[in-house]
View (cartoon, rainbow, N blue to C red):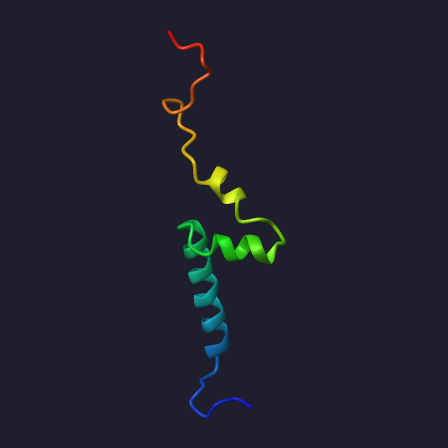
Length: 64
């Protein structure tokens, strides 16, 4: 039963704000452990996803 103080469009605004919060948290790396669990994945895959992949940190072992 809807609350008496709800106005038309409140539900849509609440969904939009929730989606924006989820997007921001995911982009910031917050909540990824829960996301992995919900997808049935091990959170350990995050270790590889959070490592830097810049060329200065990667080495082929043949650097002179």
